[in-house]
Image (cartoon, one colour):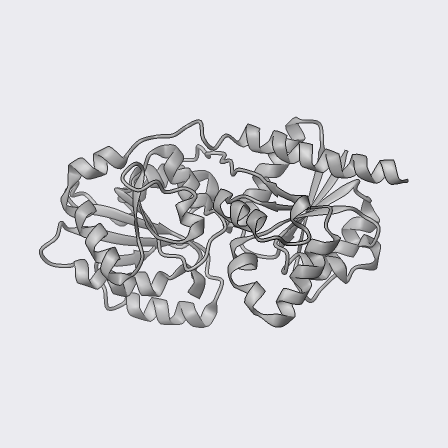
Length: 342
């Protein structure tokens, strides 16, 4: 069968691209022919061109607003059945913006399947009584760990093993809380263990990035590495003492799934997207506000036994193969239902 995956036009280091690449790889192994197309909310030409080139049996939209809006505006897509994977931005931000919420509701209404990867969100939506909840599916996230080398500490010229490396892998934009995390880290300097705070990820908001980079210049304990290739992220994480996430909103963060799989201790903001991955006192710690961040960070910085206890690799919970098989079953059911009606 033929599948078209529609992805928002962003850096290839973003979660949407990482997820789409993983889906394509696993579905290809199952005999699917998969193509990907990048789009943006105000331009339908890329989708139209892809559909004219090869009409798929079914489509998968990653992001209900950014992929869904141009899909609805593309006449060539009218009769093609599709599933939509709801992101954290869809659920936690865009639904509060009336013009975007209207599109999201329309996408969910027209979709043959609505997919979420966060079990907590799935349970909440199932309880909510929405008219489209019967088409709601939980697709537990998988991960595909790359094997590319990345000499993180060498690039940072960190030769002292007593200096802890705190890695924040996230795009530079307000929802990821990069600047706020940088400011919160100021209060950890001094009596606690020495540390280096390292940011990596693509710049997706220029004005926010300008403020972030200006703040970095006054903080020698922190730096920005740019984008680390997805295939090299596991190697980079394995050299970090802590993986951080300060997001205001997440669906399920690929970086945290990788960290949990590798067994790297996690310190993350207490939001539903992170609670789906971080089990407190098992593979990481959560915090609700700045005071909580300082308390939990100090515990991790000063207690090597705690860090060792939280460093528990979990190679089985996030199998990409299981994710791929379930996604294939959802898509095959959509195609079968369509064929039964025609």
